[in-house]
Length: 240
Image 1: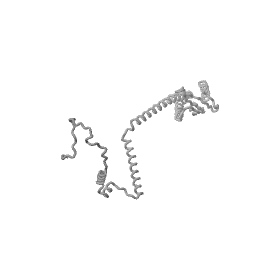
Image 2: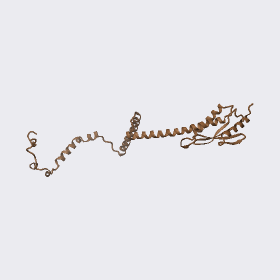
Image 3: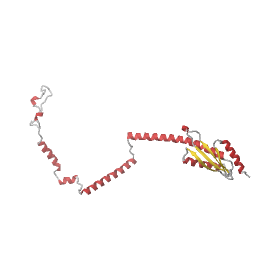
Image 4: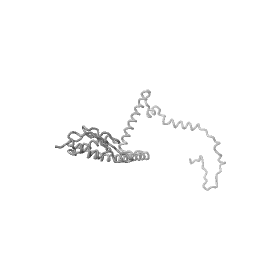
């Protein structure tokens, strides 16, 4: 018959000798103790830490001990959940044997992985920010590339804006009480619209005054009559 109490006392002494600086007994009946596990030093001297709390059950190690994350530093909630799942898995795999050292070792390895993951996360975030900045610069320089998707989105917004504009104009016309007059209606009201502008220009032309002093007498002009290419322009000839 297994002497559970004896196995528990022996394991407790071994754990205290292995982790003298991080082992603390909280209770002797039942036996409750903590072991603080710290990761290796990561980037910029940063570490993660978890204090594991164990409680021996009456039939331990034939049944798993009770355990929890008593405290932690620099761990996210998802990391804590992963540690608890890891402890549960390791406990089931070691039933029938004293297992505290195996559980602590598994957590130690996982904390070291978390430190490495934190470094990788920061590097990935840095690369992502650099990529976003590069994409933003490309957009600023080249403008937005037109695709079927963003064109259809623009077209839908444009149609909505135009419909709203037409609705506002119609509402303003209804409120003013004046019907909108089209170009065709204007023409039908005044058939002379096509000739009125021409007549206006002709009337204006007849009333234009010319300052003759601005022009020189033909005799005052220095014309090179000896020039073989010289050919005076005849005004008012019968040929015109």
